[in-house]
Length: 293
Image (cartoon, rainbow, N blue to C red; front, top):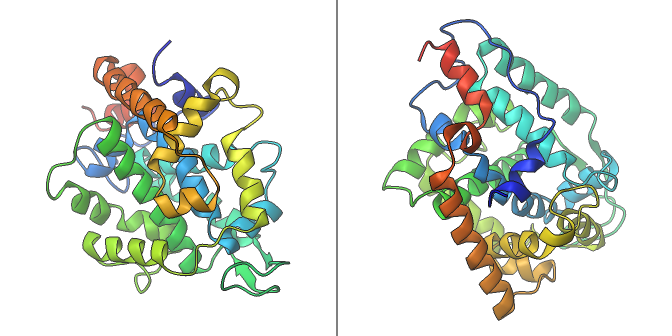
């Protein structure tokens, strides 16, 4: 079994791209950091950590809990986000626009109020998935997850590569409702924003967030369940910032560190030996054929 199997199998059921309009690069195109980094299946290894970071925000957690079938399929959110991301990243202009419009329609129905006070948010605080500040936090977790997983499991990023990836993703952020006024203009500014969120009061794990985390870390229908649960949990814990890991009550004992280190080595080694057909998402192959390369 491939070292990537527990994570890449979470992508089962994601439809591939139709061929699209020949010669249309879409939003990004070949040679861009979005294609180079986003084609790697191993980025999925950071998906559960990104979900935990998202629901560490009480307003995001409330929206996820009230407007999705999270309890039945906790990783369904990850799969739907992945499908939209792949279509926007590798689709032609029409495919990218349609995927983004679908996400906006779903988000338009997500609004309500929290029932219990959590962190700085009193009971009754309203949330709306179209709020650009909430959209920025979700976008930030995806940027963080992609760069962290690539650096951990593929190779260390060279100077400037993270900056290039972040800059290239600016259109992506806009499609998901992050306005230019809210989006940090540079990767350095993004890192400042990221630190401010991790150190500030907005991230606070309440009962709802903890319940969602239990489902994320022990999804009943996912291949990571059973024999892979320990590895799945250890790798996820290793990726999370210490404050967030502690807020969710995740153990970080010597044996957890050892499991995460061994799994990380196996994933990195697996990436190096896998053929492109297994290593990369098939969406990239479709996009390359569309571009005649």
